[in-house]
Amino acid sequence: MKKILAIAVLLPCSILAETPAERAIAQARQMIDKNPRQPEAFNALAIALTRRARENSDVSFYAQAEEAVRTSLALAPDNFGALRARTWILLGKHEFAEAQAVAKALNKRMPDDVLVYGFLVDANVELGNYSEAEKACNWMLKVRPGNVPALTRAAYLRELFGDIEGALDLMARAYQATGVSESEDRAWMLTQMAHLKLLSGQTAAAQKLLEQALALFPNYHYAQAGLAKVRSAQKRYAEAVELLRARYQAAPHPENLYDLAEALAAAGRKQEALEAFAGFETKSLAESGKADNSNRELIFYYADHAHQPEKALEIAGQEYARRRDVYTLDAYAWALHVNGRDAEASKQIEAALAVGVRDPAILTHAGAIGPRVAAAGI
Image 1 (spheres, one colour):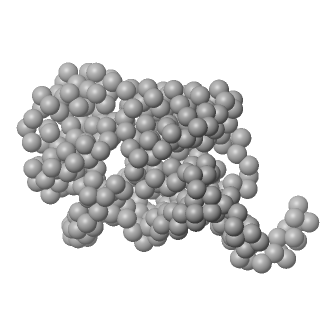
Image 2: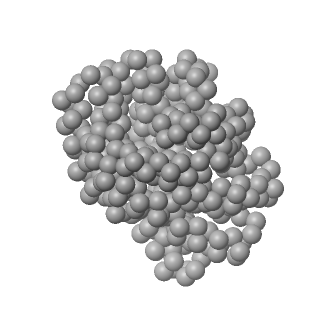
Image 3: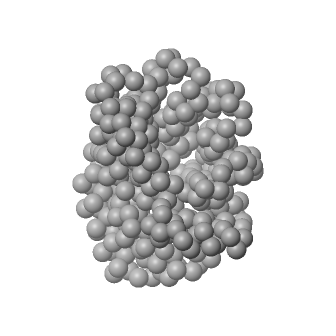
């Protein structure tokens, strides 16, 4: 142990501070410097940049990744690695239908590529095609049993299908199979396990996992959001506010501002909450027509806070035309409900519950929409 610590002391602080994605970016750039006509190096750079976007929630890295893909395709038109990286970028930008189409084409071209199956899972989940997502996930496990990308996706599907314990088991297996150098991946998995613990009412266990995630990857935006939920469950609203404020300052996305506004309201800081909600509305409307948007939050803002049901339904209709996952069905159902259209709302919330999801917010909405629907979700 002393020898390891001594080596660490001798290393430059910049190296010690590098994240897994930053290291991958540096390695890819070194490859490019050595051979600027190697398409694989630009593909590696694109993938590393998308990983960095997840690490710090900075979407500008997707634009850089797209530029790397364009360079790769200019060097070697139609090369598989570049098109695979492009699919990952499309998913990151929430262009799910296009990502699904590209992934399908790549899957036909290379039917044993595990990552492409993963992209099919991701796109189909977001579009609400859960049977297709499950098929693709099963193929991932068949092609390479026990691989981590398949385990994490299988865990999410288990959660959506209502099997929280099964989801926890799969995510824990993925965590154990992930190398210790992959600190962000491991922090993400700990955050997901905490989310599942919180769904099960195990607040203390969720808190412990989130603290581990933040120790592993300091100021991690996903873990900050998770810990804020724990603090809210503990009625420690002031602490939830500070966690969400820090997240918003690091990643100033509208949806993050919405979470902060709701936390401020729960903490009884009404004027600050009103100001935050007003800022959210302006920012959210500015991106409402884009694929990567905060429309679901905007729906609930208009339905529950601004009390403008017509606007809630307008935004819900737009998003429903793009995707039919359970969370969009829930938002659409709620928009219909606040407009007094409970017969239509029932159909949408029943479709969400039929998947098996046991999300508390969805079940609460189901109970408000109608007793028959609530019974279906129990």
